[in-house]
Length: 288
Image (cartoon, rainbow, N blue to C red):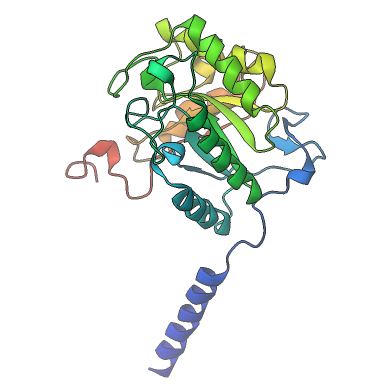
């Protein structure tokens, strides 16, 4: 009994220490310089050669549904856990065009991508700067995919290749000098078919004005950005979404290995695996 009691005390102390062992200081040090792709094209690193570990949380609705106080609390929680990136969307998924943010502002005037609402984006500025104070990158999606390809989303569809280019240049210019931006084109949608020219316009538009930040593409589940954009100059590294329907690591054999073998060589990683406690394929009664 004494041995069991000692073991329980030991594990209790370890658990307590783990809970109290919060990350000290900023998640990353921006004094290391800008992010870039490594010389062998396999990794991300800072200008001074320090490796960058992309540990992200998907705070998709960060700008849309949180007050400043809530955003600060959330970002601080993620800093304490050592997260280096928060993936968030300017034109959010959950009726992000017509439901105002917590300050009563919508992102666009009359849902026109060429007429952004300055008051809305002042709030976005504040959140991104707050993340920078904590040493956290924002993986910034200019829009969620339903504004280009509605599918199961709320929409409405507002983009074509022409106004997408205008919006992309505007948002790229706005955030080109922020130290903590990683651009994420896309938003849970395929990049091919009628979507290709619009996503391409966004990628090229941002990169035409912003030479400081890297860019990737967030695809639909079970696919990788390489499927459509491997040879596009704006795509600095690939992102796959293994998604929420896989029960094994088979998705990595399907997506990761082909990405690794593609030319031109580009870094690749999983930008959205199945979330913790997420039922497989949304069918807990069947698949668990």
